[in-house]
Amino acid sequence: MDPNVAELNAVTLFEVYPRAVTDEFFLATPFLAYLRDHCMVPFTGGTFMQSPIRYAPLIGGFYAPGSAFNITKRTTIAALQFDTRYMYVSIPEYKEEIQVENKGANAVVSLLEADMANGVDTINAITAVALAQSGQGARSLAINGWVEQINDGITPSYDGNIYTTYGQQARNGAVGSTLNSVPVYCGTSTGQAGVIQYSTLEEGYQDASIGKKEPNLGTGNKAVIAYIKEKMQVQQRFQQEKDPVWGVQGFRFNNAMILKDDYFPSLKYGQNDPILGNWLTGTFTSPGTTANGGTAAAASNLPVSGTTVTVGEVFCFFNTFDQLFRITDNEEFGFGFSGFVPAQDNTRVVGQIKAMVNLQGLSPRTQKQFYGIGG
Image (cartoon, rainbow, N blue to C red; front, side, top):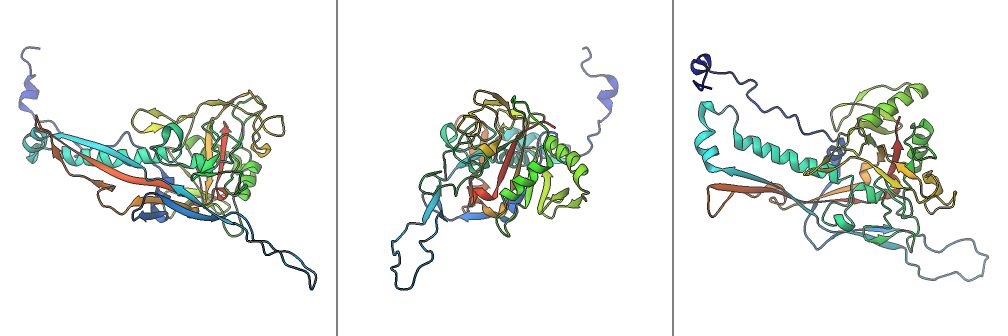
């Protein structure tokens, strides 16, 4: 184009409004908000985190006067152990851009402040996605997410994996079934995602309830929340209410506040992002159940061995008071910023937001996982 600037553009300033960067990328996660609200426990140091568990009673029973008591000393306590896990987001800048060009009245938005805000949102999003994934095997550097916590050692979780250990403690051995929560498949006998049933949710909720301890949060992505609302309208009248933690409208299922979580695993709304992680569900091969000649728990409702299972939408009941969100008490590694370090051969500076973080489940049996939901 010659001349290179149109006459009107050469003599007229352009308007930028709003004078802020509108976020059209990041999503929302109430599960992480709940963890930050009342589950955060500072990690004060050590080689790992440990929580004792009782897995058996002492010896006792009825007796006849004069008979001998069984005074055998019985082991009843074990412990769950969790390693420290580390994550980061890099924030690189060029000094020419932040010190010479992006300043004064012509700087509509501070580039440095915008990138810092992006860094905080990025590390939070990575955390939110990782909370639904495992920290075992090939993912041994990542958070020990709820997918390995809400398992029974014989039934696949929504990711198709069976977690025979939790907190480095073997399931179904010395501790019996105390660390078990059976994932529930809601699909058809041919492996297709199915319609969520009110009875399935109610039975799963009760399975995760022990005395006064009941789930206080139910969450899934947008599609499954819509399916549940459609189903509940037939069964009961429900009233929207403002969640005191997340601050948005939700509804109750018994004691649990039902909220949509945009980073929860989903077929319809999930994504496989190269930086944030993968919350797009897929398929896996069913091992069958003990009721149909397979190896998974009969209560899981999985189809016969060899069937390709469509995971579809995923939903969970959580008792967040049985979750510990562990973050170091060190300022720099507690989602803090390291400060900028200059490069040796140019004017680029770079700093990191870093976090030592892990999810420490105290009681898998007070949580419940559902998948194979398609309507």
